[in-house]
Length: 606
Ligand code: FUB
Image (cartoon, rainbow, N blue to C red; front, side, top):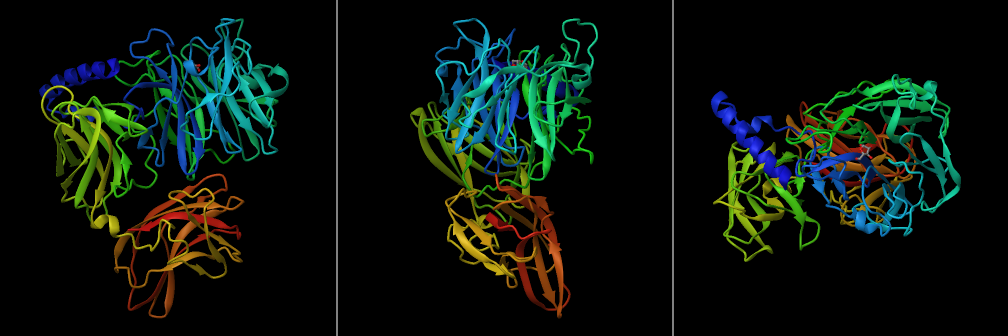
């Protein structure tokens, strides 16, 4: 909360400056860092079920050391709007730990999530690594062992499972350690060993006889196209991010150079990399928030592309961050704590489960990026509470003072966790916009918000019948060969997805007839979530348009690699037009090659 007060003071000062320069104060707000409600550090992304879950540390407000007591979880389906899942793990979760909730990483295996975290072992006073377990990516997590998994006095665990199922845990500062984890992920075989820190493997550091190589801390190990990568924080202080590649999980390693130069106002940095929805993303931390610095850090993300030889380009910190993947659907319930950028608000656990937004004062706002209203919203509902006399929730497009499309008023509800639903009419919300929820009222705290949802014609314009697959195979056919069935194994949303098996050509796929639904010359946005039964085909959504006896093919989405371990969003916007009389229009999901079985879910054409 101190952070917010500090930010408010900064905003006030900026406001004074802006009065002089006639710039709106809000112009300075950026999408990076991705979390602004608290200071976060040490990002560790994990893909699960079409979302990126981000595990971080939490720097306390006003810290003068790495005073960290808990870990936090965030998630996003689009890389720009991040949902706050609170803190499902803290030092008190480990009876043997005393302090220093530092950098960890979580991984999914056999239906469970394992989160490896370093902290001080009270009994020895040394840093040790514990492992917490949960059946959900957002917890709650509990100590799997009741004692450290491994203790060498060093920090920063990273975990990796090789293609043959062998899992490895690496950690270290100043050394680089590893153990081979057993399949249960909470024990290991053999004893902790060190990876030799050679200058060929980890670069040359000058000026520190005790540390001849660049390796400092924060290892992040993964495998891509048969090559092993170890990305790490290099050369203290200030750190930069460098990497090495190897031909096996334990080397030999070859130093490959800098990924992210020293930048950003924090003397540490910490890498986490993930491939999501056809793109590659680099998470890191810096001191970019107001009041930020070496002990008050913030997590940020950049999109990048590997070079064709597998090397990683130089990545610089930006304030714009990664581009949005797809759009956000305002016609389904959205958590209030799903935020791209905010000003003044904070989050807290909600009595209705999950988190809510709170500590809202007059003029505070939340930006939700890339909201697809389609042909229009007619009303807005918010789940809200107020222990005072409430306030107004103003709905603005594209800036906190942009077009006002609706205002919901909330009176006092008798308590900050006494929830009620308030609705108000909406007009003028069409197309895709950044939505700003701006809160106005008297002095002091106004209201809390748990979730929100729009209704309207824009929500019913999905031209795909049974796009959420909750009605089995209704509305769906196959384009060419294949057998459709409804699947309950790991749906993207709801309880079911659609499965096609028995494809005999790459163009075979689940399909729907759109002939009577399309308007000539109109631009349509397509979103379809896809995963493969096995294999990693390149999938895309296509529209076969037949007019005047000729068939042409409109690419509704670009192709993206899909896999069996999680959902990938195929998303695109394309203009559909024809000459003469339209006699057939078939939407279908296909692959560039191969005949892998495909699951699809949450399909829309708007
Ligand atoms: O957050 C505490 C420590 O700072 C981490 O363990 C290191 O990687 C550095 O980021």
